[in-house]
Image (cartoon, rainbow, N blue to C red):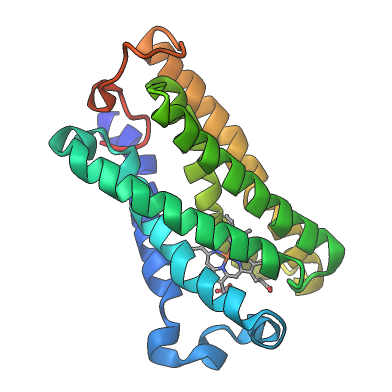
Length: 222
Ligand code: HEM
């Protein structure tokens, strides 16, 4: 039973790191082959697209480490340093994500899904940063869980799109659907995780007393 509970954590680590690494396939394959479905971005928003594909996978690869209680306990300095890298990566990837969102394939429904995702991703991460600077650690953890759930959209999109295509749904329908499905359910799961960790902490207050992040029980990390 204990091992069964570890499966979602292991999947979260595995998928985050594998999808982040696979995103850099353009280094080996070249842009046209690596991103055959998004070559329009090279014509319309080339710089923003480059910025996005370089920085977004960095945020995704760092995400599981930031949620890991073991990693935080081992070195709070590394947690802080990687947190700064994560936030920088999110700001660059989020802003460029919003720009390329306006010209994403799939029409208005897909474009609005991506643009809103980018905006919510930026706001959640900004809030996580703001509250930790005020020493509000429990709130910081909650906002980081939301931010990372949105970062994980990079994974859910790449899992759900092939699933829809295999189910016989045409790309014209599947793409606009996945532009929303890749992040809205993630936020719902994030709220469950936050509630669970709130219960396990026994309280959930905006507190300055609780200023040792390594003491918090991490819901997704070991
Ligand atoms: C969470 C906010 C994000 C937004 C708003 C966003 C937005 C977008 C948009 C609009 C495109 C172009 C799609 C098109 O034109 O058809 C794109 C492509 C891409 N994004 Fe993101 N993205 C986000 C997160 C991520 C993450 C976390 C990764 C990490 C792996 C990522 C990696 C990529 C890659 C590699 C592409 C190139 C096309 C592909 O491989 O499918 N994105 N993104």
